[in-house]
Amino acid sequence: MKKSDLREKYLKKRESFSKEQVLSLSEKIFRNFTDNFKLSESQKVHCFISIPEKGEVDTQLFLNEFFKRDIRVFVPKIYRKKLISVEITAETPLLKNSWGISEPESNEDSGERDFDYVLTPLLYCDQQGNRVGYGKGYYDGFFETVNAETLKIGLSFFGPDEEIDDLRENDIPLDYLVTPTELLSFLGAASKSTK
Image 1 (cartoon, rainbow, N blue to C red):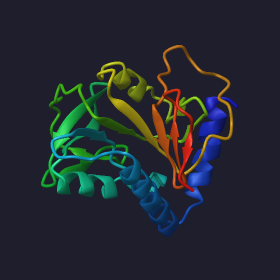
Image 2: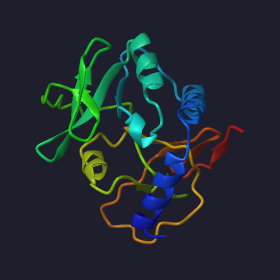
Image 3: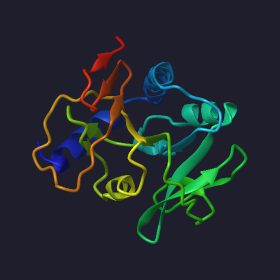
Image 4: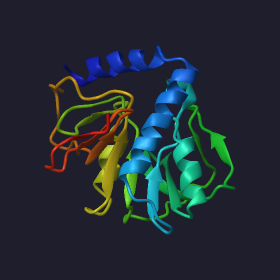
């Protein structure tokens, strides 16, 4: 399927979930993540702030855990048509932008490139780790700037059931996908299910 068709299909699937379903599935994804990835003080994690109106995986669970463990947290912000990485704390006030995305007021790019994990939003991901986002290409550009050791981790309610027909040369695949029931690795190792 083409990205545009997959985008439409998975947006509709996601929008069909109730708030309770989103929270329940998000909690399973969160547990699956914390069961499989080592978290320790002073790590650096880049994590998107979810948009509840779009039915995204609720990342507040992740952010709360990171703050509790004294992990340094960075969030994306679109500034001058580019995704920058702004460091926040539990006390940083967040404001809604014109797209309804909560973000810090600061436009100061941290310049950080050595993240342990980049938790990435997506609508769909195939069996090779290629993601379908909202179609703006911000994360592909951002992935090009981060350290090669950084693990790019997608969070999704859905597993990879379909191929993406219109991949581009500059599409950068994820390293892992975390769903409510599985952890899938695209690093050449066998996929691991946590069912």
